[in-house]
Amino acid sequence: MPDAREDVTTVNISKEDAAFLIGKGGRTKRKLIRVSGCDLDLVNETTLAITGTRQKRQRAVKYVKFVTAQRVGTVKVDEDDAEGEDCTVLPVPQEAVGFVTGKHGNFLRTLEDEHNVIMFFAEVGDKNEEFEHLVIFGDRRGRRGAQLTVMSVVETKLPEYYTAASLESGETYEESDDDWGTSLMELKGPDLAYAVGKKGATRKKVRAASNCIIQYVNGVAFMSGTKRERQNAQDYIKWLLSRQDGQIATYRDRDDCTLVSIPNECIGYVTGNNRETLSAVEEMYGTLMFFVGGDSEKLAIFGPARSRRAAELSVMSSVERKRPGHFTDGVTEKEGKNAHFDTDRLFLQDDEMSYALGKEGATRKKIATASHAVLMYVGNIAFIAGTFDERQRCRDYISFLLKQRMGREVVIDVKGRDDVTEVELPDGCAGWVAGSRGSELRRMEEESGTFCFIGRTVSGGGEKVLICGHEDGSKYIDSGRKLAAKLTQELIDQKLSHDEKGGNDKWRKQDSWNTDRERKRSWSPSRKTDRSEKWQSQSSWSSSWPSSWPEKKADDAWKKEGKTWESSDRGRQWPSRDQDSSKWQSSGQSSGWKRSRDDVVDSRETNRSPTPPWRKKHR
Image (cartoon, rainbow, N blue to C red):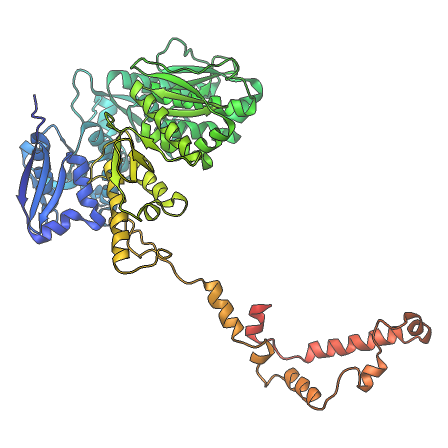
């Protein structure tokens, strides 16, 4: 049995290696932490401390050695490391090495982030002129996913390089055991395009619903996982393909399927235009959904139990909005005491519902994420699904939230709770940490996947930031209560430093929100104010109009002589329009007045110099 005790191993490295291990923005360091499962910390410029269990520390030391070796040249991996249970070696033809690596290694880095692995080309055993070895370190699922993706990319450049042997002899390019293995399925033409879907959407949702690794390598579907996962993936693909021909399969009596009755008038609303709404639910919860059994009112949902329940409640919520009372008539409150997966129901008032939902469902989502329960509002009923601990956490968080709505101070008992972290607030820091309308707390919640508010505990003391969440997290990884506590402390330190320098609370110091993310906050003077001050400095438009313009000169000369329009001969000839119109009409001068005046206007417009650029700007 592996030793589960944690200890610290130190590794001596050079300054150059230390910088290389951290990587741009700490990216390489975070990757090593994720893959090895250890905490890595630079004690000083040349000492790296690795904290974790014995097996994890051994792997972390090995990964550090290989990563730093990439800085100086070719990496060499001995056969013992290549045959380890955390390693996969894939031969890649020389013609495709650059294609797989990508510009500056970007493609490999993308696969590392997606599959949580470490990948690099290395010398393993004797050097071969025809291909190079791609070494992949990580857990089994991550390695297999990255390996199949690379195989698919190579086949686009060199067709049948891998699949020829797969179709001929069933080669899967991995070792199987009693439960884990790979199944193959050949698809061609329209079937392949349909199974892949637009931008791989269908493949992704089948993979999520079955929890099976699925990759299409030049028309051959590689499905890796346990026997049950592989069987589910094969069934889902066959059902999808059969539906192209209008065939109906039998889905009843399966423990991976949930059937939901949908009223006929709500089917289009649930499905959406071009199936957009249903596809969004599938993508969000990792399920496969379609109407089945010849009865258009039955919606089949496939996937793991938790995902199916979340998708089912989402559909019920949509139907309830279209047809109120369809699912909630006669439903009562329920609070289960069983420890296994179940669903509770909690009634909320209209004003409580809108507050607990939040803008675009943001509040509901953060409570569900923090409690790790499925939370969905169907009408005025909160459906809470999960284990007993998850359901109880969700109920508590909703209670804390509704107390804030009433403007009451939230006081909770943290004794015996393992889901709350307290951060003491010095005097005068509460408003700074909360931010405008709670903006800073909302930002911390989004970053860490927690539920945060300012309150007190029954044990006494001053105000505190109470951080609620099921995940404790790690101070080195961006998740959980530890991350939220770290971000809170950064804001407190920022406020104290600001006060020491005599700062005004109206302006926040331009420190970073999070150094790792380099998210700067700054305030600059309003450009509107600056623009108005500049405009006010000019007495009028005409004051800045160059005196050289002909029209300006004419106006100035006219005024200098003391003349006005009314005193001029032309003005006497053209009386104002408010005079008796009958006199003008009887004298026959009205048409002449209009015609003469228009001629003057047309002449002035024709002979006018170009409009000054500054005047165009303000028109």
